[in-house]
Length: 187
Image 1 (cartoon, rainbow, N blue to C red):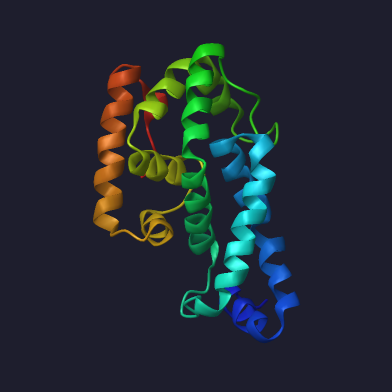
Image 2 (image 1 turned 30 degrees about the vertical axis):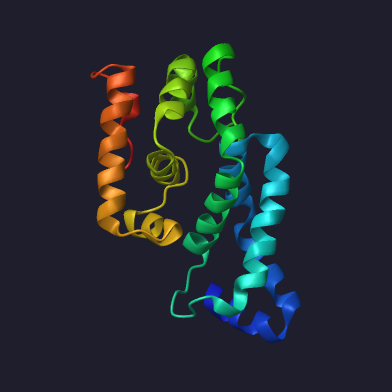
């Protein structure tokens, strides 16, 4: 199977080939965008993400075989454009409780039950984070990106990813109580 870099490289001369990148990554990006913006905005944000990626495909670094971090970076920039709506969503979560999860029922059931129980507190804690810290937390914890992939997605050094994640963990633990295990962000 051809890697993402090969597909993107070919798509410069054959634009229709870029559909392979959409087919490979749209589901994961949609899930990420739905978590960040809500289901109503996720479809539009996904379309905006892939339109931006398509327009920038001639500048893609073909030395990177996996386009996922690049696409998450674009998606995070799209989210930044909708930042005010995201903060309102977290405040709403604090006020009324968690929405139904955007992922399949069988994925992470135990984690969701715990998160739903703490949903209003978690929503408030996430809303209180600086946007850069929130981006790092959500890309690592909900999307499973490595520190290196987050660094690539956000165009920041790996050390900055680590420091932002460390700072965010401390703030989330303080907001949710220091014995709170559900605050443990992958890493």
